[in-house]
Amino acid sequence: MKRNIILVLVMMIALFACTHRQEDEGGDPEGPAGHPSLKAHTQIFRKGVEKVASNVYAAIGYGLANSIMIEGADGLIIVDTMESCEAASEVLAEFRKISDKPVSAIVYTHNHVDHIFGAEVFAPGGGVPVYAHETTAGLVGRIVSKMRTVTDMRGMRMFGNFLDSEWLVNSGIGPCLRYGRESTMGYLPPTRTFSDMLTDTVAGIEFELVHAPGETDDQIFMWLPRERVLLCGDNFYWAFPNLYTIRGTPYRSLQQWYRSIDRIRDKRPEYLVPSHTRPLIGQERIEAVLRDYRDAIQFVHDQAIRGINQGMTPDELAEHLKLPPHLAEAPYLQPFYGTVAWSVRSVFSGELGWFDGDSARLNPLTRSEKARLLVRLAGSEEALLTHARQALDNGEYQTALELSGHLIRLDSDNPSARDIRVQSLMALGEREENPNARHYYLTEALEIRDRFVALADARPKPEQVRRFPLEGFFELLAVNLDPVASAKVDQRVGIRFEDEKTAYLIHVRKGVAEIRQCEPGAFGGMDLDIRVTANAAAFKEMLARIRNPAITLAGFDYGPGNAIGFARFLGLFSPPEPKLPHEPLK
Image (cartoon, rainbow, N blue to C red; front, side, top):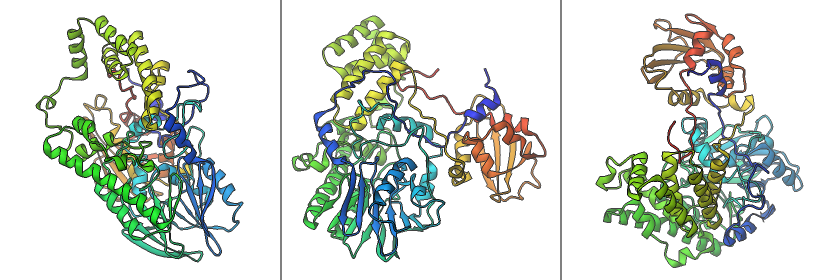
């Protein structure tokens, strides 16, 4: 049954996925035990502001990332600004115990949420230069773009933001992600950007910003030559690096990453300040740690390629490729964030694509067909359920997890299969050393038990919405086109935004939305079904669900067409309802 058009508009496009901790919402209040080494790792995030050099201070343990203050003669530079205004406010209060000088500049080491969304706390209303790589603003825009829903969902599982404080030990590179339903976002767009390197002086502080792609393509490091302090962003932290992250991102080039670390090593810093975990002091120690770190990354890259050329599949790479003992035993290369197995799979897909070389994978059985095959081999669904229960009782939790997935695919309401899956996930999570995997297991267990999908529902402030470009909103519209509702539609709509002096033409053509940006006066000779003159800020706020759609649409000018017709048209762009990964499409 077709949804009410206005309801669709109210629900359609949430700009931000904000994670949140759910306290006391079911489950064992004591929570599953954490892996001993993961518990010990928590000491890395002991909360406080650490003085690194004479004028450099790192705030650690206030959120997922660190925020760094550099004190100059008459002002401060803040490098990375936390994940929310609430986290940033706590950090600023601590910095103010050290200096009351005004903030003269902000530096983003890269585009991730935990480094940029507290900026407005340090510079209310902006007004100070914000330094970043030239691609950072566009990558921030990706947060509100086409991959938003799935990365939100997987990110919440990975960071454990639906787990209460008894279940969440730490997040591997920080105590937790303080970014949730009640969070306030204070992103300020970059105003000073560069390509390869930028040299500048602010408040008497001389610094270089150097492009160093690694964990992200826009990653930079900051070098203070006078103090011999290097702020390395996320290209080093006290854990095996997330060469692939299970929340999903574009391919992270391992070669770029270890070469960027080499550029850091070439500076021969006396102080190394990462944006996660604790600083390192001493040139020799820093060199030894960074040399091992980059060697681990290169080893994974080179040996994965060697295995690929041998004909190994991703599963075989994950099974056989191990770090050399001196790297595997290094305390700063323990699998508290990334893992070797995840990394080599990513190298395979990043370098060679999805096909693993096995002919059986060219046109494989669907997941439902595979489930029915296993039932046939077992003799019946009840027999397969018995095998799953026996595996659970024998402590074969991975086997029980996989078998329960097949059973649930055939009958998503099978209470016994659901119970086996929940118990398997809980057991795997309890034994997992990597917090990302632990959180994923435990969160999915809660989702199955309590029948919900781990998606948050945060609404940004209007000023935040207005800062994001229209282009991202229209890209999101395109991928949310309902192919069934639009299968017989051939309709052209032009929208002119007077306040941003731009226009967009949307042609919905039998399941495809062709969207083009145009000059404001481009619609003069066009044969349009609906022509809209709109306010961009109001349009963005409506799509972000912070402005009433009926009132907003009624306030636009039309000719030809009207608000009802435009609402009907926008109703074609209906986001799909997310499903749990083990369940079939409804």
